[in-house]
Length: 132
Image (tube, rainbow, N blue to C red):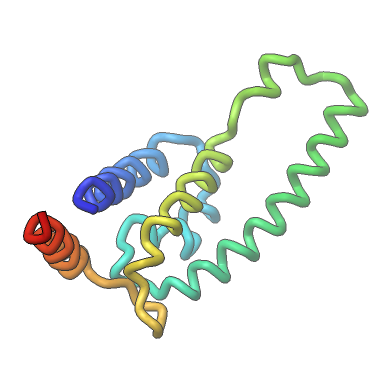
C-alpha cells in the first residue's frame, strides 16, 4: 500500500511534468480531468470523470477520422504509426490515475487529501505487521 501511494505521488508529479513538457493543446491542459491529476483533492472526481468521458468520445472520433485519412493517403510510415501522441500519453496517465485513486473517492465525489490517504496506508501497514 505504501508503494502504491508513493507511486501515486510520483505519477502526479510526472503527470505535471508531462503536461508542461509536451505539445498538448491548451483546451486539453485546462480540462477538469487533467487538472484533477495535479491537485486531486480540490476537484470533484465525478465531474472530472464525466468531462473525461465527453472528451474521450470526441477524441476517438477524431482518431478514427485521422486513421481513415492515413489509409487513403498512405502517407504514414510504419515508424510513425507506432509513436504515441502526447494526448494519448495523457489519456493513459489519466486511466492509470483513476484506478489508483478510486479507493480514496468519497460518496460525494470528493477525494481524500493526501494526508488522510497516508494515515489509511499506515494503519493498514501497522495492522499487517501486528498480524505477523
